[in-house]
Image (cartoon, rainbow, N blue to C red; front, side, top):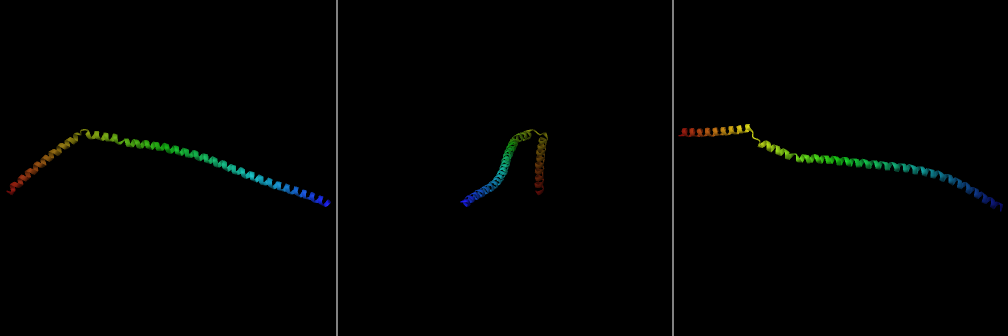
Length: 131
């Protein structure tokens, strides 16, 4: 009977030692797990911050592109509207009387008349020689 009691006491002591050892190992593992979870949370926070910055930058780029697009469309619209005033300007310049042109036209007509007259006289001379 003393042996049985001694055996039970030794078993309880062994159980206590194993429980304390397991508790210490579990505590270390839980501390490691907590540190890992903290690092992971830190990285998740950084990723969320970067995502927010990326979204803001993307929105700014989109706004910038839209602004430049509107500016370019305005310039293109103005460029498309520009030919009408130029056409009107050229038409008015074309329809403006030019005294030098009138003089040149008169000279050309006079020169043409002289050439026709000279050709006529040449043909008459040629016919008279041939006869």
